Image (spheres, rainbow, N blue to C red):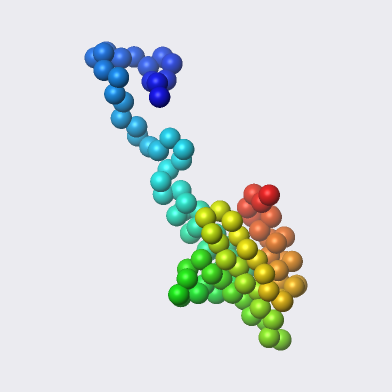
Length: 98
């Protein structure tokens, strides 16, 4: 790693202190997960107490939609097909999805 172009080195030292992480802030994943959790709960999903990355939504007909988050991946499954389709559309509108 080299100091950025135009960096004035008055002391002849090759040591710099970084003010933040090079590839984003260390709290960024937590901030993203908090935003995601708020969004999912607003969609009517309940967060599991035993695993905070697991969210579920039940219909009145016994159908279930299950969503689990791992790092930046999401698995959405279940037999509550109208809800899974609706949530996919909402997620695509709210977040950048590949």
